[in-house]
Image (cartoon, rainbow, N blue to C red; front, side, top):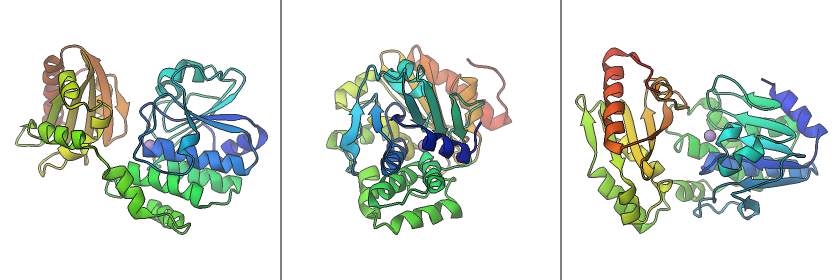
Amino acid sequence: MNTLGEVAQFLREHDDYIIVGHENPDPDSIGSMLGLYYGLVQMNKRCRMVSADPIPKTLTWTGLELIEHIPEGIDAQDRCVIVLDCEPGRTGTIAPEVQKAKFLVNLDHHRRDRGIGHIVYVNPDEAATSTIVYHLLGELGVELNLQIATPLYGGIVGDTGGFRHANTSAEILAIAGKLLEYKVNPATVAREIFSSYSLNYLRMLGYALSKLETALNGRLVWLALTYEDFLKFDVSPEEADQFISYVRMLKTAEISMIFRETAPNQIRLGLRAYQIDIQKLASSFGGGGHKLASGARFEGELQTIIDRVVEAAKNYLITGEINERNS
Ligand SMILES: [Mn+2]
């Protein structure tokens, strides 16, 4: 693991970067990419941004059009690739190329055992990768401007759920306040992140919420969506990722879960908690993430997987222990 100062030194000494975020990019992944991109451009570095998956159309930040959507090769062998907000293996279809980079720089705030890359800075105490980039730009002496401040602010808003999650702190509000000094429009940023859904999306959300299930007097709450559901409503499984934020609105919820059948028999589990460390639960299924926001993937019949996970979650809520390795 490196210090932020060492990351800064490396970036000063090299040139010609490819900046990559994670698959199905979210505001923090995209925001940290754009913030770092404009910082490096200001330092006269050659720089590209690449994403394996398309960028959500609701965002209008300056520079989004510069992010190349390349599902295949990026020719990284002779390049320096900077991976943001995930480990190199989570960059989607370009991951095999990314991992072959001549130099791999990895900046992230997801909790994990070890860093992967030549230069690694992983800090789970940071609420967002956008705040890591904010500190890094400070180290580099980059002058902030509206172009940089807007995506970084957006990344923070995204990963703190609009300053509502447990990762909201005096420090992050101070950084957000600093960014607003560059005339970021907070209402527009929030609208684009939280209130820009299609009619199909809202109709599917209504359907999904009507299927909510609970156990242990509502301490555990979940919903499940089949592959056919997504086809019927013409909503992509990636878009429905955010349904979890409604699931967890149940007053009694301690653990909230969403099961999405993203392709026939391919199940993605999303987990949220307010206090309980659900990363432990996720990792017992071979998944991972943060203490209060984690996930896992499964292959198999949806209902069988639901039964298995619900049983394990109930047990965890009752005993406070993960009793078996589920993976
Ligand atoms: Mn993030």
